[in-house]
Length: 436
Image 1: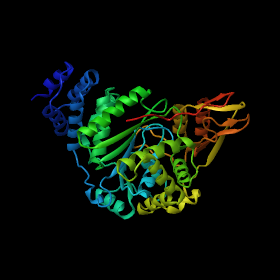
Image 2 (image 1 turned 180 degrees about the horizontal axis):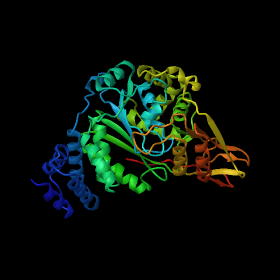
Image 3 (image 1 turned 90 degrees about the vertical axis):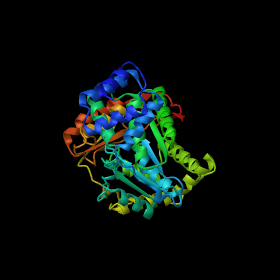
Image 4 (image 1 turned 60 degrees about the vertical axis):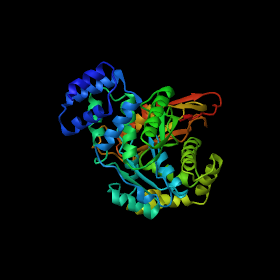
């Protein structure tokens, strides 16, 4: 078998066999294929596509390129271990809320998350804004912590799906990132290699997401669910809007604080809608609830009794963080400067552009260009007014936080442009487009 022949085969639109897919991944890993050959194959895939069988075989080959975490020790009390993945959004702190909620409802969670690249930090960055919080966990540590407290969140390890890392590096420099089969195989391989057998996917679309239309998000979601099924796993996908930021906080420490407030019962409607839906899907799928209504009742009880908040405290304590942050937000990194954005007219907030908000947050220091770049955990944006809320001229609609006064002025104009106003009350905004 020669790599050049496989490039030619895909260039002509033919389907690869399972053995050919394995050869491609093996050649990538052992160096027998040059980067330019793999790049040529990726470009052929980009234009000619892959079948579902091909993509499932590619996903399995990527999984086989590294370690697979064995979470069977966690299945004593619950036959399945759950996970959650988001395709990325603005103000997306759902993981920080959902994980302790599910743990409080009896679902063990061993989650691996990544750092942010682009507008704002990822889940790991947000958690590391908690003083002392350790995310660098080996597999044994991860499992033991879940056994002890019911949940753990660690940073992704390079030992899982190394082929995906190599493929993504080449996709990134050859303009082949936005290929549905390549995206789907990347996401599903990492989730399966992480050991979970049930995963709820939050597939986002809109100005603050890399997928711009709900139709394209549905296509990607269906591929991921179908691939997982072919590989013997159960996934659900919730297709959600990211035209506007989620909640009021965008940043790192500031999003952890909003997550704590949610677990205390202080919720914005948008975060509540998404969190409750994904939690209910998980509980029903894992037979921890009889119906969606039963699941909602269990979720609300976990909030009302404080058990979900207690799980978050235990997560922090278990991973070396200071659990006192839950009651004293001054223990988080504090910004040196703050600036307010003032409403210039009366009316109602009709839109807050997610991309412009995210870019302003990045200018404040909360995001990074490269994964090795440092970020400012205290930098961020608080939206004093969100979609649908009434405003009067002179009201504060947003507050910017930074440790560099110059960054405030750069971000201020960008954030002002993010806000749109209407003279009339706004209709309900449906965040969930479809569930697959």
